[in-house]
Structures are given as structure tokens and as C-alpha cells.
Length: 365
Image (cartoon, rainbow, N blue to C red; front, side, top):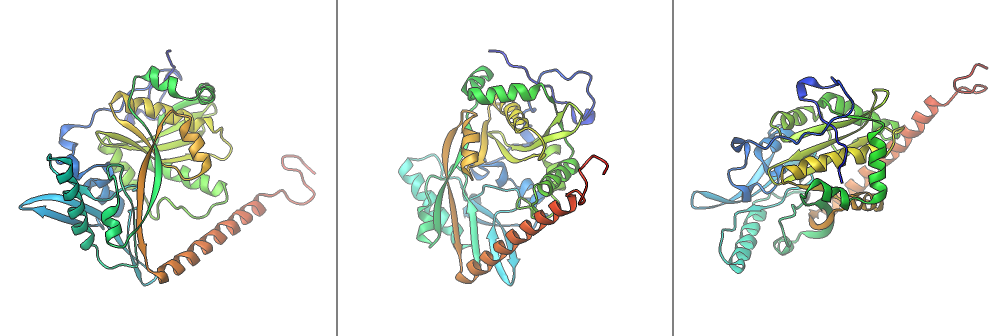
């Protein structure tokens, strides 16, 4: 079947439209000069130096293992101090990392042993810390080496959609979701956002839902978003309603193999179909470039239902962590405090927006 699509304006033409109907264009192929020189050592875009520098301001560390003069293993992480303690964690807006290992082209039994021994060497280079926490990329099939070093591991799941012809992708989408997308396409158009506009929209939506704490990033993320856009690796797609108001937005980040859905946000008063519309068009663009579309981790029962509607398959991923008892206690107290602050901020927001006694909003007394 044929589907209606939108044409995204070029960055220099943002918000200039001659017609609300057009066809979405694919993201341009990544230039050879920007592709990783050693794909096995950069299994995801999150492992690439430019991204790690962008999201940490250059403040990250990396364990590495060499064979002669050649690096055959690396493990990036961010080292941070917190309440007198130390953490080795994922940088902001970096959902996946884990060991990146060049295990050669030999027999699987030999390659498996190389992966194990290199991973052990990488872990032995991690400094003593109060907490280590990473979510491993999908190329890691087991966590046996982590278990040998006393780490705890948990299995998580992500939804992915393999590239296919647009008609086949559309056929795989659930009927109800297709209807939601069609209806959303009649209610506005798609455009690119600037990083500053996206960040403000995201924060405003958090506040509109009574949340005062942003779990996705702790400092200004605009330079990292701009770096991704400038390199042709990222896009900030927004759905604009018929009144010209931004209703929803997403941030996608890609390498030459995968398109990652990193962030989604929607105005509290907007229709949920706006996010579905943006994801559908990003999926098309990803497939046309031969990339897998990665929805990321499944965090709630609602996200399971939502992602499954797009016809994806589940992929197991591993979470590895190690914490000291004192850190566990402090972190639990911190999360409780943040939750209380969020509830108080939400209650205050509702009080300040409530109509004055004896009045009905929008009507004279």
C-alpha cells in the first residue's frame, strides 16, 4: 500500500513551508570520513569519541587493552564524585556502552576466549569506586566475565525494527497504530527543531506534568545535540499542530548500522498520536538507509505495548553494576528526596494555577 509522508525542511529552511503535504526525505548517508575506522571497537554511536566528548565536555575515561601496537578492547565510562563517593557510570544521554572488543576472525571458540580475557583485563583497569553501572550494547552475548569480577547482572529488553521496504514496515504496524498515525498526519506537519527549542520544550513538558527533576541530563545538553546535527548523525524532529504549536518532539541518533531513539517528549495537552507519527517517519528514514531502528529499553508495561505496536522484535541486553552498601543507602535517600521534591513541586504548580475562590476560569464573577 502507499502511505502519505512529509518532507522535512533543510536546516536552513526550518519553519518555512509552502505546502503542508509532501514526502519525507531520508537522512543523508554518513560520509566515509565520519565512519568508524574500526567498527568492532565502535559497536554503537555512543562509543565514538566525538559523542563521548560532546556529552561529557571531554571529561570521560577509558580502559583499553592492546595487542602489540593495536587496540583490541576498550571500555569508556564517566568518573564522577558524589557526596564524597565516586561513580563509574554512563554519561548523560548515553543509554548504552560496555566493552568494545576486536576478537578477530578465528573460530568462535577462540573468539569467545578472547572476549572473556579482554573483558577481564578491561574490568581490572576500572578504579575502585563506590558504584559502577553500565547498560551493555546488544553485541554482548553474556556477562560471565563481569560475574567473575563480582558484578551483579540483570537482563533487560529493547525493541528493534530491522530495515525493510516501507510497505512491509507499514504492514507490520498494528492496525490501531496505523489509524492513529493517519489521524495525526491530518492534524499538522513535521519539521526540524533547533537544540535550544528542543531543550526548552522538553523542560516545559516536565514542568507541565509536575516534575521538577530531569533524569535524562544534568547540565545543558544543547552543544551535544548541535554536534550530532552538524555531523549528520542526529535529528530533532517535531510535530507541529494546525495552530503552529509544537505538540511533540523526538531526538534520534544514528551510526551506519542503527538509528537510536534517544528522547521523546510531548506537550501535556497534545494527542499521543503525534509521537507515533514522528517515530513512524523516523523508522522510514532509518530503513531507507539500511539501518536498524532501536527503540531502546523497555521500562514500563505501557512502553511494552507502545513499542510492540510498531512491529518490532525484542532483543536482550544486560545491565551490570556493583555498589557499596553505604552508597546504596545514600542513593536510596537521594531518590526519596527527589521524589518528594517532585511531588511538592507538582502540588505547588497546581495551587498557583487554580482559579481564585468564587471565580470560574474564563468567566467574570
